[in-house]
Length: 150
Image (cartoon, rainbow, N blue to C red; front, side):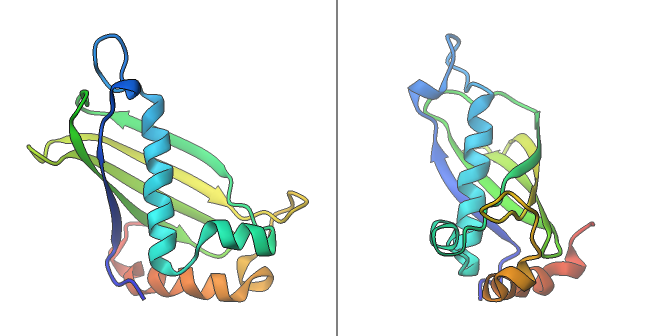
């Protein structure tokens, strides 16, 4: 089991991710949150692609928000941290921080909220529909539950 509270990815911004001012376009933060979230799932042993293909479970984004603090520029390396702040088998929430690798300056913060759906787009309780997936995610959540501001 992964015992770290947060997962993270490192990302060097690409030219195509910027606007005419060579500042990262806001839509990229949403993509980066998904990449960090996938890392979190993988570290739990919950391999999203395999889970979706074998069980049909989908984890749509129900809400997302990003608060921009400082601009991220072309060729800047950033660290995107992902932390689960709620998990009950029906819903799951994450918070994210975007930080400069060079200066450690906080660039942005974000949140996403998710639900679990079956192939027919009906909500499911993960603990009933896919118990081993629930166990994998719940072990990490329970390990850090008392450290998270719910």
